[in-house]
Image (tube, rainbow, N blue to C red; front, side, top):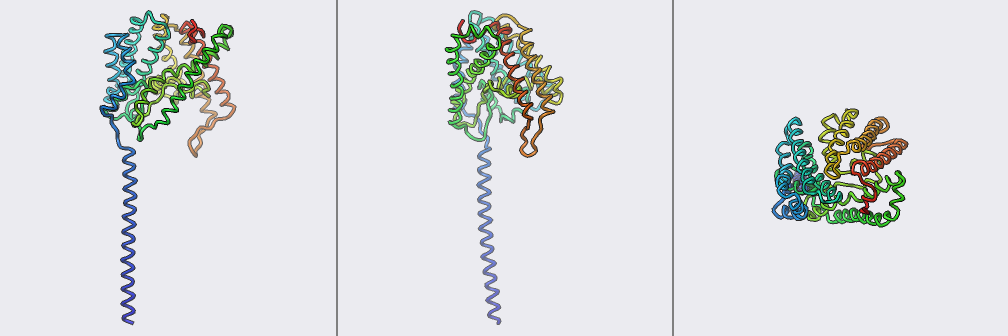
Length: 404
């Protein structure tokens, strides 16, 4: 009996030792797995900062435009490029300051850049046609808005785009559009899709140009048809300003950088909100941070939206003055007054007819209101496009197609 008891005790001790070894092995296994996950998580969120090669690759796609800018506006290029390159580092310096400090500082930067650009066009582009002036003005405006918006937005906006040090700030200032620093390298296949998307729209415009040149005079006899043709052509043509960011993204393949293209597919915008999320994204973002949010945003839409569109209209007086020599106050007020009215109606009615799905947070809209919203957005877009071309730029469908 004593021997059996000793055997049982010994067997129990052996089992305890085996169990301890198994537990130890499991703990080591779990620790190894946790370490692997932690290592992978750390790698995915490891901060990447541009090196000399990255800076050189960022400069290459911008060099033709910068060279042309220096050639055209000569000595004025020095202060202009200096302000552009210092805008985002300056925003990083002020990112934690109050809006009372950031807003006037950003406004001064925007005013200086716009003043240099407008005066340069009037001085050095007087013998160029409206198309060249328009391309130069729009390209520089997108670049200015992409950089200056961070001063208005502060830390929240800069954190959203991953701009948290001066290396990244200077690197972002080199891009003619907004860029976002990501956890993973930008894949080549997405760039190819972007190339096909932009190339398809630009090719469509040239095909339309060949077709519409034979019926343009007939179309111009009917305002509704001309407005539709203008919207179709503009929806394709605006993608020409996506080309510089596309080239920039091509040189950034393999880097943790994603370029936000300035324009999306605007023709079939389903609402005013959808349109403004695709139209001139840097400028739309700048206007929101400059006027809409400081005036109360959605919570005070009755005030923020009308004032935002009114101030936006007044900021465009200089555009037509620089391009065609006329401020066209009535035209711009009509364009932005109509778009602002539709936006205000949409925001107000969305608060009544929309609800948020508590499951996944998506917006649920009544079908009949969605249809009305689409009609309002489509009608306002066509009226704005027709008025913009005829009243603000003193032009027509013929000029848009390059037939004059």
